[in-house]
Image (cartoon, rainbow, N blue to C red; front, side, top):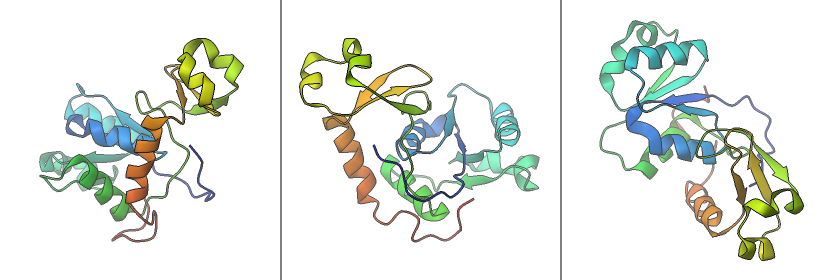
Length: 172
């Protein structure tokens, strides 16, 4: 879990009910991504406006709303039929995203490095034997470490290739 050396201003996202998996992967890539599955479209658009978030959806009808049509809310329409990882690739390429410090995939909270002693009572004993870095979520207080699960996530993110190098649009 290492931060990007680049100091660009990262976009913040809000995903609609159909994009919960994408929201989790954007968080793993380091992007502040809001996701509330039971929010109605009107409230979703208002939240995107009030929090200056880019709205991501595969529902073309949502982009007909006035705030999106007149440009007060930025949005990215996902092509229908993409797998979850193809959705992630589409967003990364389209917006030329760069990897950043991962966020909690569950709640979107910021992760803070913690000493082994501070989290020992919340980490399985076997993981304590070999893990060297520990992180705590400032939101849900979950504890994470660079174990096999995180290595699988890293491999997927690395498969996307050159982050921020190719795309049809500049970063938002």
